[in-house]
Image 1 (cartoon, rainbow, N blue to C red):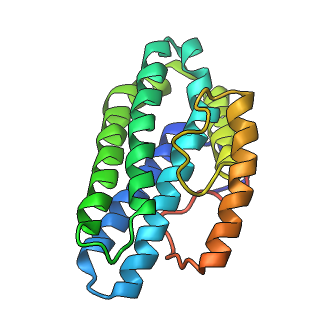
Image 2 (image 1 turned 180 degrees about the horizontal axis):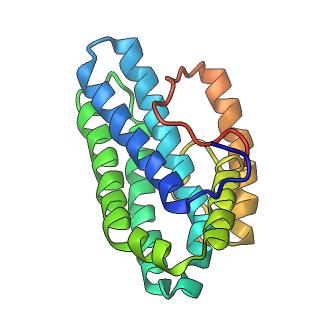
Amino acid sequence: MATGAHLDVTEQIKLDHDNVRDLFQRYKQTADHDQKAAIANTLIREMAIHGDAEEISVYNDYAALGLGDAAKHNKEEHAEVKRAVYDADATSMSHDDYDAVLEKAVGTFLTHAKEEEDEQHPLIKQRLSAEDNDKLARAFLKARTTVPTRPHPWAPQSGGVAQKAAGVQGAFHDKVIETVEGREFVDLKYQHPSSY
């Protein structure tokens, strides 16, 4: 992306949605256990990051856009997504039902994603100036770097200071866990801008 170009928050959000769609297709298409594990780890990480990043950035501006009820609804759906993603994270891949547990998490995430894309994104684009859209996109991208990389369904989901503080602590904890467990990840098909 060229320096100085405006970012679109809906495009940055959809990029995450598209990565989850792509990762799940890759998961279903491979029979290699190690590759499946790395893809599952990446799916869990991406769904966890995405939800918390939206909550501490984008959803905080929804009321000003006349979407306060949508923000409340989204946070309720995020709580459901987080529980499903947590179940996938806590279930061993050797468990007979692992594929179904992961599919439930991804399905819950993608159902919510489609609702956002179809119903909320057009309104956001319509109601935000190019400058405000860019500012919100950059806030979302910054939030992605500070939130936990694993699901924490019992952490605060207010989008405020408590969630941000818990997120910083959770992100550090998650990095330790991922390192100790030696979790492997795969590359994402779609990339956010490297500078924002």
